[in-house]
Amino acid sequence: MKGMLFLCVANSARSQIAEGLARSMVPPGVNVLSAGSSPTFVRPEAIAVLKEIGIDISGQRSKSVTEIPPDLVDTVITLCGEQECPLFLGRATRLHWGLEDPAAVQGSEEGRLNAFRRTRDELISRLAEFIGQGGVK
Image 1 (cartoon, rainbow, N blue to C red):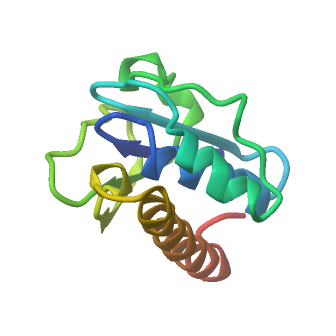
Image 2 (image 1 turned 180 degrees about the vertical axis):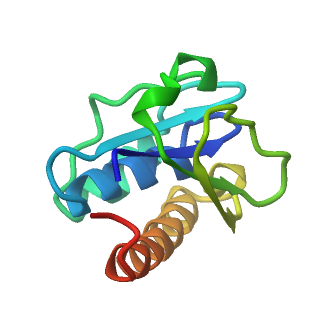
């Protein structure tokens, strides 16, 4: 695998968490990227829940899918659960892991963080399975 791209609409929560997790799990030399069709900013909750497990994504930024060079990517994983996911026009294997957007959760700070933790933990599980099945070499 030369590279994997995680896509969602705002590139602020799910795809940012996935990018940070994947970077910590894949072998050196595999490009790990994330992007969205309407990028905004990396959610502080995403930064916080990854920091809880020793991963620093504070240097990541939200990016448009149009910024991603197609030659760096051979696997695209879309994460949109409730919206229409952005398209990546490069040649790539495509997977869809529909997840609810933790950024849409209202309520207390702890309730919002718990939504981000559930997303983080689900992505850890899916990435471990994907990598374990030979999805990344």
